[in-house]
Length: 70
Image (cartoon, rainbow, N blue to C red; front, side):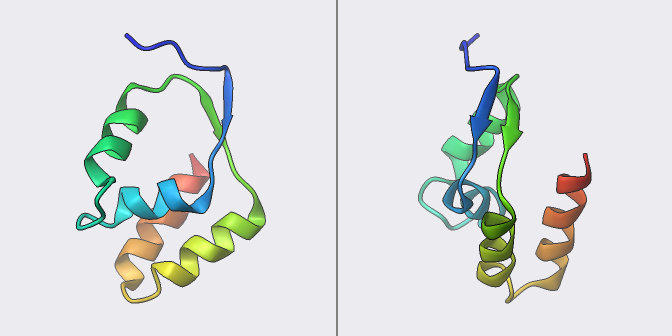
């Protein structure tokens, strides 16, 4: 098990990689999210940027927004 900080600030790049399967870092990000026990924190600016970058697929945008609720 990997030890992480209690809170981690997450930028838009890691979130886009998670929702974009062809992204070169997708598998690494999926692994990180599945093993991290840290509270992941982001900003409204990052959420806006991710929504813009995922704009080609409204279903993926909705998945992203649903994940933010949790």
